[in-house]
Length: 321
Image (cartoon, rainbow, N blue to C red; front, side, top):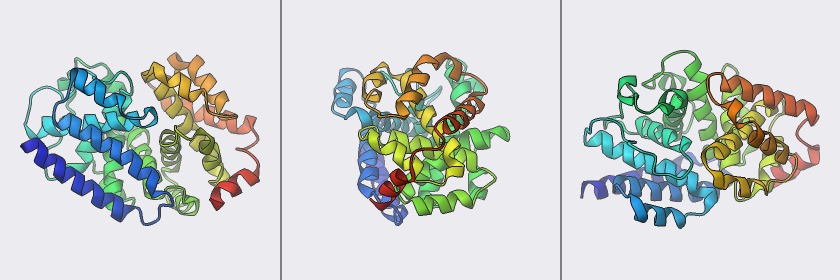
């Protein structure tokens, strides 16, 4: 009964966020498709679905949307864990066959959206049996900042930098503002003028925001890979290296977390097939401390190699759609 009531409240709240926060979106259907699968995962997590039932439910979710299903599942598990004041962590095991990185963003999403309800504790001593916690910690912060931006429909720096769990200055760009960039795509989907305006307005963290934006542009369009590169190219060229770094981060996370990603990613047309090939051959070098700098270097290198991100006509064509 409690899970059902919470699920209904979450659904009501998310519908409100979508309707109020997408005034400037130019593709509301894309966001609705993502949130529908996220909500399906939330319900599964709240109900503690496991085993064959969970496998069967995931099988009914199109592969390009499964990462959002698992993010929602982690959100639901985190909600249940926090509200019931359970001991330990909400992830005694990863139920997903892939997309483990989305468990961390789902946890962060709960922590950023749950007020006035309790959060999941990020005290390191509670997570000692999960070595991934330390490395993936910035993703938790990014999930929390995504939730804050989604709820406020804008960038409120005071509130963002007051998010619980920020340990040091590096957490702002590696976590908080990466999540801000992801959220901007959901607020201003395909609205290149608005996205450019917001990027220009935040020069102090714009590299991280642009990386997050590149991640979201990529992960939300796995079912239409031909659109990803032109979307990046439609934004101001000064941000191309950082957008491309985010795109590469998305490919790398997918390939690291789910072996099934290789086949659908093989459908990406040039020149992003070059990035995917490099990600697949260099997986081991993109884990561990310093990963942000490595992705940033790659973005700069590929923009230089391609002399930009494609002919102006490609960007103009996307902007006109």
